[in-house]
Each structure stands twice: as C-alpha cells, then as structure tokens.
Image (cartoon, rainbow, N blue to C red):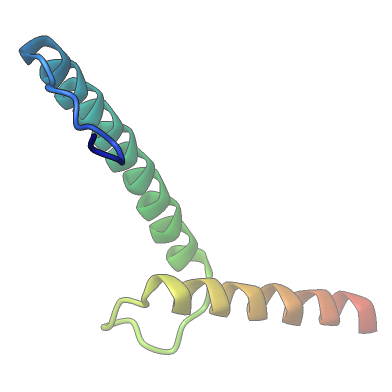
Length: 79
C-alpha cells in the first residue's frame, strides 16, 4: 500500500479553469499595482524633494511623505 498524497490526474477542463483563474488573479494584481504606482506618482508631485532629476523609490517617497506630514504637524502644534 502507498502512503501519502496521491496526485489526481487533472482534466483538460480543470486545467483551463485553473489557467483562467490565474489570469484573472494576475489581472487584478496588475490593476492593484497600477493604482498603487499612480498614487505614489501623485504623492511624489506634492511632497517637496531635493532632487528633481532622480525619481524617488517607493520607500523613499513614503518616508519623505511621513516626515513632511510630521514637520507640518509640528508647525501647527508650535504655532
């Protein structure tokens, strides 16, 4: 007797369904990333930056935005 999982033979219809679901998931992920990149581009436009020639990375953009928000809140707090 064999132990462990037995690999089921997948039918052509099942393989096509799996492929379709993967393509749908890939499309959703692609759209999500496009939305995220668009949001980061908009953030880069409004956050002051030293270099106008070099595009900030995602993490640099987020860190700079966080520090900028902190600085603005300190200005408001101090008056």
